[in-house]
Length: 270
Image (cartoon, rainbow, N blue to C red; front, side):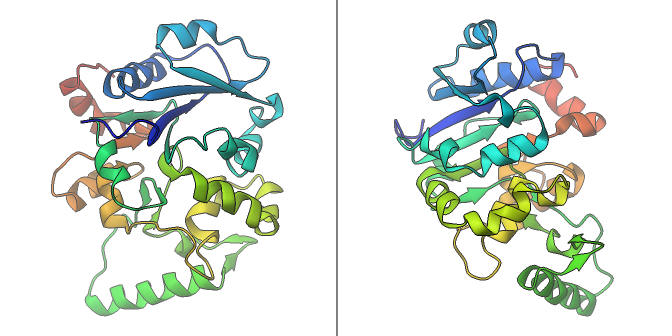
């Protein structure tokens, strides 16, 4: 069962027309799983992506200025801009599906019914705690570091990211809320827009900065988000979900040994 028309679109950003074999797998799966949805290719204005557009049967294409696609910093600017979200205001949600993403099945109706504003793969703490006291102490530290933006060597401390949600490469975003906040929070964005540090990428802004002082985005906890997507610790994630595969995953090429048998069941050799 598909989500309602105009409720959600799949947005696939790329800065080039040539793709790798693994990226081809990501696009084949996107076409297969989301056949009934608007699938929108996002590219630089100067890029001729006609072959990519037709081969993977995209519904439409949206272009933005080339300088948004020349670097990670440029992409961060795009994903923090009201210009980007304005292009998709006809939809309630967009699913960002980068070329290193993969969806196992269509769970969009479920996730679009959860009244969330943002969800992506959580940044999990890989190792457990030796006892309950240590776990509680660590939880208090995480809250403190996030609330007061504790820095280490001029960048946000690692504690700010522990079990936070989540990565933007495969993420569901409520369009109107992101559009409004991208205008309202421009002063808070400047630090992120001026940085090349990956600790200050666009998804860190939406995941941590936006809710630092007051809850502005409804973001699920890491356990629920683990059912949405896995990323850097898929083995730990699989334990959290009780052995159930998530809706999708991101950066799977970094854990090929883990994903190889699972992708084989999906019909892909990686």
